[in-house]
Length: 220
Image (cartoon, rainbow, N blue to C red; front, side):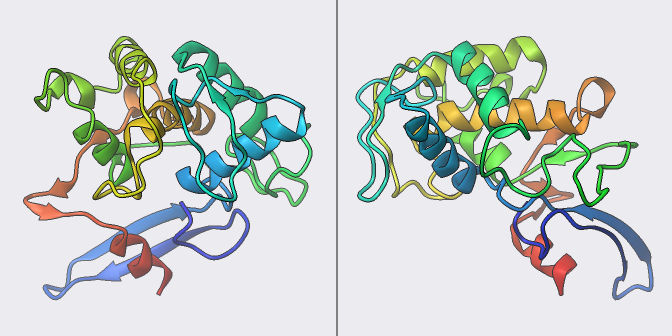
C-alpha cells in the first residue's frame, strides 16, 4: 500500500506494453497501513492506552530495541477484534488521514470493487512461511473465513519471537504472522474485498513473479 505518494490518493494509470497492448490499473494508497507500519502503530496505541498485553504477539514475544515491550497472548480472535478497534477506527487518536473503508475529512472514499483481485507479497509470503507439519499447504492460501480462522489460530498459538531475518515479505516471521493474518482480514473487510471479491493469493501471473516493483512502476 505504501508504494504510492499521498495520504490516501487514488488514481487510474494507463500502461502500454512492448506489443502495443493497453492496460488500465487502478491504485488506491493508504498511508500508514503497510503491515510493518501498522504493527508499530498498534503496539504504540496499546501502550498509550495503558495496556501491556497484545493478543497479536505470540507468547514469548521479545520486542525490537526501541519498540514497546508487550506481553504476547497469541489469541487470534482477540487479535482480530483489537485490530478492528484500534487501527480502523477514526475515533482513536493519531490515526492516519484516510482509513480504509471510511469517508475521510477530505472527501476521499474507496471506490466500489469490481472484477477479480490478487493478494501478493505479504499475503503470499506470510502463508509460505507458515507451513503445516513442515510442508506448504494449499489450504493456507484459501482466504475463505473458515480457512483463515484455522491459519490465524495456528500462527497465534505458536511460541516465538520477532524474526527480522525472515526472507521475503518484509520480515514475516513467526510472531508477525499472527498480526499479519488478522490485519489482512480486517483490511479486506474494510475495502469490501469479501465474498466474490476475495483475492487469489499468488506470487506470479503466467509464470512471471510479482514484486513491490509493480507499485514502483505505477508510481513512476
